Image (cartoon, rainbow, N blue to C red; front, side):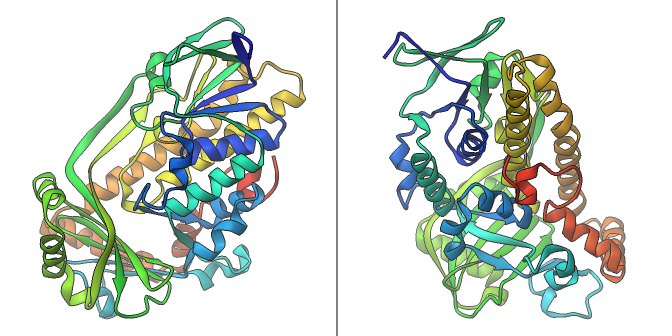
Length: 417
């Protein structure tokens, strides 16, 4: 081993966004290295993460194009319908006469999606396992456990010092290590954002009846509550509580947690049992002021961390990964310096507006629906009813949620980079 190993791209963070980007970049001929403070085999542990993620149908095309889709399909639950309700208690979706009711059906846009569902629900552990296996099969080098101690952007190279004192270099370093990204901080990129005074509560439950591949989203005064279908007659529950209630639930015994769940939602959920770990985490919005800096690019939560109201956080991050990989591979084929300001600016221009617009939209959505003010409730109920009656508008919402609008990277069209 030489004193300084060189690569085309150094990727800090081997999580979902980082590993996906590594596969895409390697597919295009770039020599990459993943650096992560977690032991890499922890990605394969079934208890590593108890959360689940909604994957848009366009994002699943990308996973197929990277050779990961086949391993995920047995564990991916189709979402063929999404029922959205505004009310004081869940259950209004079972009363079609409610005007504050919105129905999205995959069949409505089936002619343009080749019969794809609106999305797929997949447990994070399944995604991590499939990505880790694909990274290993592709022969991508992984340095883990290893943490980034310092990053220096030189004229021609980015020089990364690891905690063990070893040094690696590449024309570009990519920060994919989440909200607290050391690469972003080393590049001097500031963030803007705010907390919501709310916590997200996440649990997986076993259902007493078949969910029929239907996802339910309720907008209650305390915040959104989602019931998202999983395989094996299970569902992922994601709901919003005040920070105080959220902390109480974090500390509650399993029995107390189950009791609270049934008190809040029992009329609708009927016979449910919590399985696996539960998570309670503070909700906030955080946007990086820039996506790039000298010899540096950000993807995923390092670039933008949003409210989980629409389940689009991972889809935004994987779209970053697809766009950056495409820009870098094209630059490589043209003989350009892949870490140059000219090349990185193409990526920033491609993703900046989409990320900011989605983050602002989710923020506005949360503020509009997380209250019980009568005039506001009336206005949003009228809006929901209008969207439900205007089929082209409803279809446009579904295409947007499926990630199939705008200037799509090749991977999200199902094509190789």
